[in-house]
Length: 347
Image (cartoon, one colour):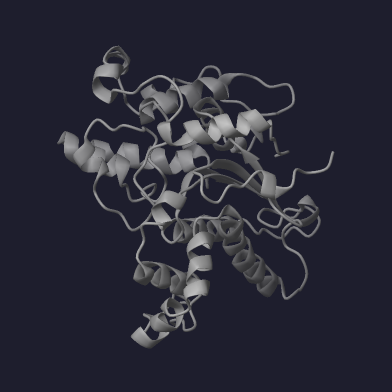
């Protein structure tokens, strides 16, 4: 079946959520262990994860979840054209410089630009307009992710040619149910593939990083400090938070240069998402070889969250989070528009 034209899917002026998949050429294990040669390229997964974090701090794109596998990559991303339109010309120029620096330090990070170099970007009115649009575009986001990884991989093996397949696949997610289901699907990828037993042991996934921050919150006593570690943690602070409405707005409003915005993505708390993920991962699938072992304690018990705390959270959910049932407001218009046109993409 032919792919849908991307012009029919992408809307530059709308906030949209996509499931993005990029596969290694011929689905070879270019980020895992090559069974034919015996060489292990698993360290490249860290390259991809680190590059994702860099791009999350430059683009007006929220990364909701990700999973780096041995021969492919999953990203759930939300475009934020509303943010990029509020950026000053100075900020757009600086972000573009950090994306494509003309000078680099010894560690390959961007050098601090001079005023002359920034003016060269700012003073090109037409070019600056294009750059502003590109900074909230998923095609440019994936281009800036895939190309540096391909160059590093080819340099390491001293070869030329394709590292990734021709182009990434993009599947629009039109409502909150679709977003939640896709995030769970992505976070469970290592378990379904049989390379991890539990979500918290799934390397190079968003859920492992969220769980690490949640566990570190137990090291501090105050509720504010705990929420800071969960919302702006060392590991997952570059990812979009899970709850649309946090229990403490002051913590959510804390500025961060590691991600496009502090906007959440689901009408549920992080613990509720982990519970949903844990339950889903225990369900056997005939087309996949892996699942969470049936006899394993529930995730919240493994994370030392008591049943009493969980029941209290569920009981007082509406009081604590004040979330209306239905779509996130930012997605309602896009969802109705997309449904009317019945546009889908093969992911």
